[in-house]
Length: 211
Image (tube, rainbow, N blue to C red; front, side, top):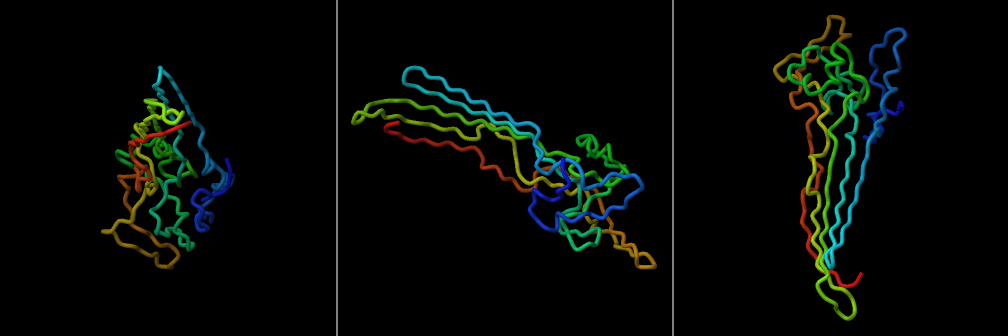
């Protein structure tokens, strides 16, 4: 828990307070789940040897990273000059999104809490099979087959935009010019991977002499 907004993004604009309306006795919006909060990690390694055959496996698990429901990057909804700190006002009617995202259904009719949602967990499995098939110049010669990312969940940059600007709507301004209303619609792809960062499954074969 901290109040270091936008820390994971490393952008100055993301560290600006969103200037949300406050009520008496309300908690500081910036205080909440840290950008770096990963509550669960697990690494398990297993090695088995049978004669000249060596089999190794490595499994990794990590909790998903937290994120704040907001507008798509590039939209400066609060007009403070930063397009990276705009928190979404969660509609009460979210249709199908509320079924898969309890973090949204619990916040309907209010601004989203900081880092109140969390992306998917990640799993990876790597396997190595090594077979010593000969002795060369006094050193063991072996063939090695590595299977990398054999089981992997799709990872990447999460689409944290809950609200999108409605291209068919109209931006309106109050008579006194103090309020600008942006037409929005709910992003049906909220929480999905926007830009994959996974390296994909790989197979590597090599020959080693010695070691």
